[in-house]
Image 1: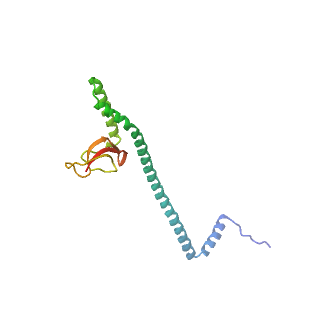
Image 2: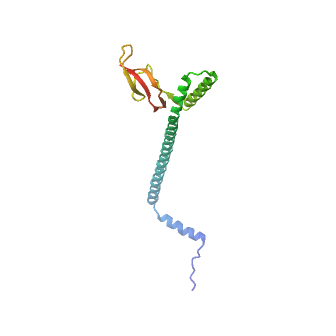
Image 3: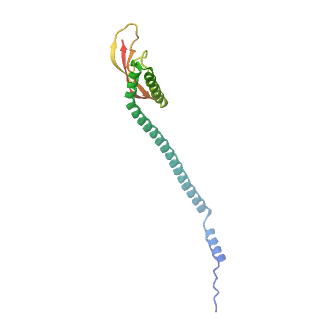
Length: 175
């Protein structure tokens, strides 16, 4: 007697798999779907957090670059301030050569324009109220015609770049 063997074909394999699938309950499928949804939400949340952290990192690096640039420019400008002081003296000096005086004045103006172009400004002094953040008081006078803590004379010009003081102004203060 010959036993007939069930011949295995791709179609019969598929039917066997279908029979196995029908054995899985709808509840089990719903549980698996919920599990996959929770996992999906976890990964999506992680992706959003990572994207936000990266965005914050880019902003922080950008601010640090700006700060480092500002500090570097300020340090270089501070070294040029003494050159500007000498140009101020040269402009005020008496000379018999008008072309020499004109040349020095042009260089002085060019230096001031260059500093203005990178946001370097003079610190206001005469007529202003003394502010220790911007001014160094090296002389003090008592005079009724001036107000309390009023700056009456600038002895050395001060400079600032934005909120950063590059050099305090030396001043004479009244009362």
